[in-house]
Image (cartoon, rainbow, N blue to C red; front, side):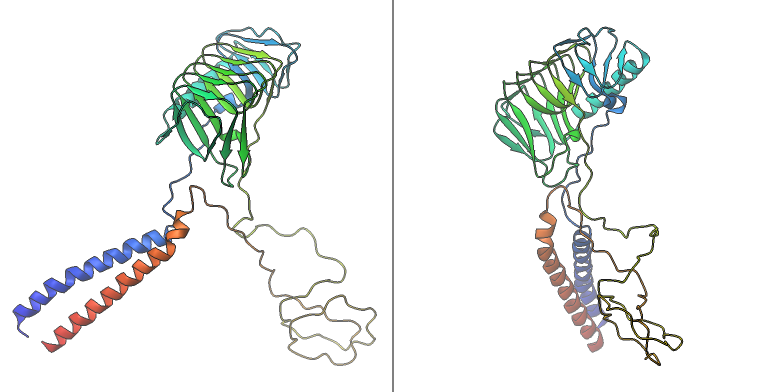
Length: 365
């Protein structure tokens, strides 16, 4: 084969080999990166505002025996009539530095929630809807009936509702969870005011630009935080939202040293093989019936009659079983793994074939 033909062959084969190599690398990245799912939404940081059940700009008014599980704060206003009969389990801060700091943190959190992207646009009526974790934008939100939040097995799932104007719930409406419950990470960013109807059972942190009104008997597992206006209560209960962590067995080996030694006769089967020889000649007969038999094979036989069964000494701690943590953001990656593996195999086979052809042509030259 002439040098000209060799150069032509190189120009034809080498780019193809490069393309195959690039394809294989891309497939490998997809396979070993886990899945192509998007990252889970991060929680909104409330700062010191997280210490308050109610936070208002002008005032907080209450009628009846309302109960606040956390603190009450007002700034720049400094009044909160109706306590008592209302009960505040935390502290009351009226126009002081603590309330000011909480209001500043509320403003930061409000802007964070309002700026999250990408988002999904929803119609005004939320009743009868089931939503998965994510960011949702609504013009003016209305809740009649039940809104279901499906956390998909992730108790740390985040829901952010960006409402341009008002949030209004009808009497007896509710927000419920399925597949895990963590109201700690539900945020309602309201562009003007929020009103919870009589007997509404609501969930999440309400971050309102203006005011919040809770009608008679409405309950909130979360916080009512208003930037400029008032918070009005009437025989309401506001409980602190519980932040739940991920479920499942840790995927790493537990650290630390056990603080005690097992006592008594083992009731299970040891899984290791003793690595040493019994020493000495036992002088008596076994005094009891062992409750379990060793499954390993001793490396030597004791001489004489043993006074009891030698207890095998495992060479390592048994490895704890592990359960993989749930992957948030969907499971599309698991479904596409066989396809990606197949593509990688085809790319590799093609590359090898091209390389063989290239070497044969070179040897013929």
